[in-house]
Image (cartoon, rainbow, N blue to C red; front, side, top):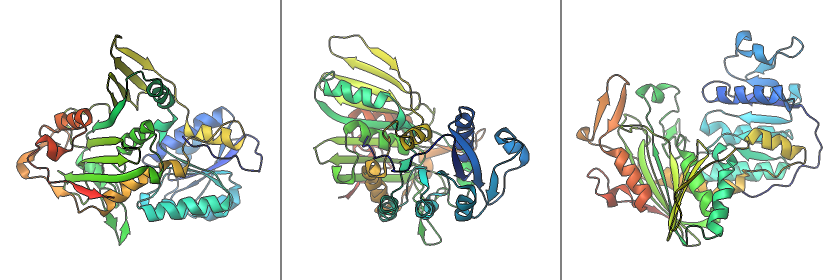
Length: 395
């Protein structure tokens, strides 16, 4: 990924951190901050939540009998704690304003993905952060995997011949309660503000970002054409079963298909197609399978650099930043194409069924379609799915 120059100010560990959004996925960040606090790298100085966490929830963070400060006022909390880093894990539409609130105070950022709900909001955030001279790491954890540079090196060495394209597949499942967890869940807009909480822009956004990274097409200008097919089985506003095909400035093709209505949920993966082999990357597991002519299959497991830990090391002048805002520009072009596309099409009633023991909707045959799209770089409509409409094209 692209590097970012270290800030002029030098910092000494442990760095004070404020977490905005400590419930839901924020629990993961809370646990990760505790892990880094135990290593002496950071100190949880504050938590910004509308409903404060209990003492029991925060007991593990007690330092000398003092618990982290809590407030619903993010800016005031940054001021009172002297935070050096803010971790933002709040609803998607709030990302830009909170990031700029931190930047205005010289506070560096780990900003959860997707960084913004539209390309305009992304640019407002990225430009504002750059103008403030602070560092922003975007939370695509899969891009901290050591498998990403390793795969790119294999490709550069010609291990699988010329790359013909990259596919991505995500067959996941979410119960109907998933869409009731927050007012913005499963919405395209809320109270006149963009949300764009779709399968490819939020839960399986890593598949899109990772495929773009393996192609080396990470900046906005690297994308020349985007085709989308957005559908939904659930009674939501946004999409839960979709595919996208990206054409890059270098002539590459990237197709990513995903669903939250899988028959048999499995690990998502990215697949690099070459003229003499292929590389499969299960990015949540940091696991790679290399299959190439003249060799037996080779499976390799890689390590991973945590993005908050990388941000701390960057601020201390010991590492390049892994996921800068500009290196997510291509991903944000995909988000923008999905935002501008027509509203997702509701699948016909006979295309899905309710799994009563799990209270979730399942699309018949979707697992095979998702895998076939990654394998052939074709869209659902090109694979003969009866419910898929002709693609929408964005440039």
